[in-house]
Length: 477
Image 1 (tube, helix red, strand yellow):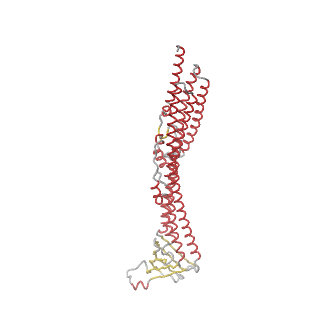
Image 2 (cartoon, rainbow, N blue to C red):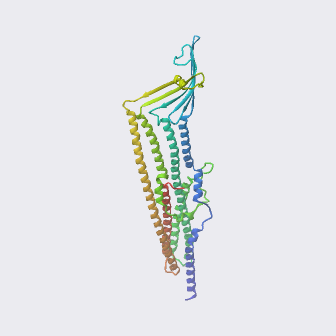
Image 3 (tube, one colour):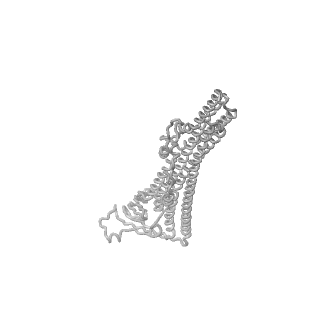
């Protein structure tokens, strides 16, 4: 071999080795990214729980329910009443009547009252005692309203609604957490894709530059330069599209970013996701335990159960409409201001006011209709509870099956990536020996890129399915 041929051989070999080195170093180029501040999922979710408006709105449900309970308890507040009437005409005192009174309702249907009457005048009502007369009395329903009345029903339902509001709050937070987790990992996957395309873009730029140099030196054909430049353009399009997708996912994630002052803000450009956690092998959830806890923990089912409890209170109230209305009133009377010093059986027999009112509908059609209507509502709500329970169990099974399948597909994609990587290395060795072409190397590299994209896509779907299982079971935290 003459010296000119040896020199040409060395130039081709050196160029091939240099290109091969760049190809082999491409994973390093893809991994080494600019140092950025990392936003971990824990930090992101903690900030979400503290500052997001939906969380604060969910907290308002509890405050509103507490306000409703306070209103219902107000029906049993002591009441001070005052009634006064005076009439004078042409200098004649017809009557003067004053009646301050204190009423004490109780949550047991029994009501107490006390007060005094001061009446005088030439034409006062003869039923009234002249001068001052005091009384202590009670009111008691004997049939309708004895075990349940409107005020007690409202109070019991307000207590139930307070518990129900907590479940509604948990349901709102469960939906918010799932959407936030999904947005975070979609942002992470977009970031991963952009880093990968940027790494391949750097490799393609160097390869295109070296092939151009080799072409100018007469070591490569024009077809190789076109092949290298076309690959560079292809990666440029992929990188541009990935950058656009990253910006979109960053904007979506910004919907969940709120400051302590209650102001929204965009995700800063120097913030990056926790990519190591993205590829972490998250275990599959324990669906057996989730199924067992559905009835006692899931907000949707608990809300329906509390709805049933409220309807049961309503049923007890409607049942009272099937009973006659019989109310008893009894007052112990005294001259002057509560003079009960000589209280005895004789005193009780001669100083009282007693009364009873009774009202009985002849057909009870309104009561029967109301009672039948509430029983239908209870039956409908029981069916709704059974349906929701089965739907949630079905969702858990479906999302779990998806997670299992995506995990298996992800493992297959990783194996395929390793195979394509081995094929690329073999092709690079052939290229270094002059037995291959840049076209074949690009083809192998494209397959590797496709598998990396597929891995990220499957990892994202797997994570979403895992979180969907927890969301369907309301076990996100």
